[in-house]
Length: 203
Image (cartoon, rainbow, N blue to C red; front, side, top):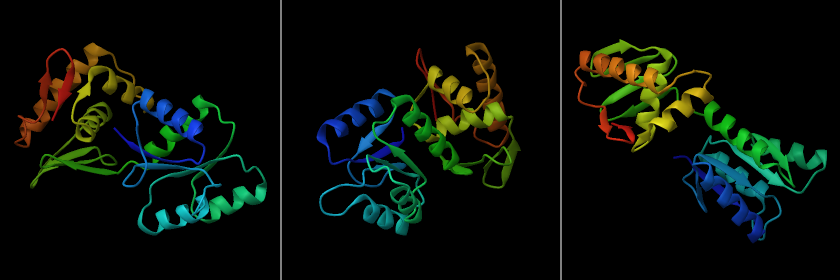
């Protein structure tokens, strides 16, 4: 699950954001490392602009300003210090979640590595050592899900494919998992995907 840095001066809004994020499968954190940052601007000590500058020096994670400051000058300054998005309070929860999801997808690594294999999401190939094999889009997204999480439920995999405009049901998922296992076996990694009975799959 992706970690979201939440830096918000108002305790009630911070609690609200953390509850919203947890309910949608994210892990809110108070400090890096993280996969995306939500920053208020008006904070004691360092303001959001300064924090954004510092994050940009060491990271290319998506940064979203979530703030009550609503002038064009504030927004322009936010982008100039490295923000990827600027959302004004009061925010709409559905819109905020959609922005978070979009930025995380855009920032997803083109090459994933785990358990001794490498998955190239651009060429749709998986490799182990000197062996590689091509995958379909569905197979590649399923493998990406498994590489990013400790355990993937069937529902999580189906939802991820839906979010990436790939449509699949449980029967099709089962067929794709079996094909993926066969392809991994062809490069010497047939043992990698295991079934968590009644739940889903893991590497």
